[in-house]
Image: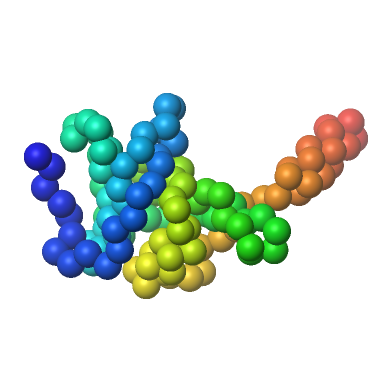
Amino acid sequence: MVQSLNTKVDLTIDATAFTGLTDYGTIMIGDKGFEFYNSRDSKKFIQIPWDEVDQVIASVMFKGKWIPRYAIKTKKNGTFTFSSKEPKKVLRAVREYVDPAHMVQSLSFFDVIKRGFMAIGKKKS
């Protein structure tokens, strides 16, 4: 069995991790870090200490009414994407441990398209 990083757990919620294939499990947010444990295979887990978190990126739709997924960008190991039943609860719990200045919104669909057209215009010049 895997040893947890946390000594105190603030939130436990069912979630999905998008790591190649989707993994279903549980997210635990505590005083030492963010943890995801797979419900079927105990060997598949993700543990991210709070000092390793660089940014928390939320995909916000319909002016904040719906958050389909969020990602945690680490300093060394890349970005981990998650989805949960109540993402606002998760992000509020994460905000207690991560500086709110490091919590950002991802680009919308139209922002990505606009940047693509602007990049094409700059390449021709």
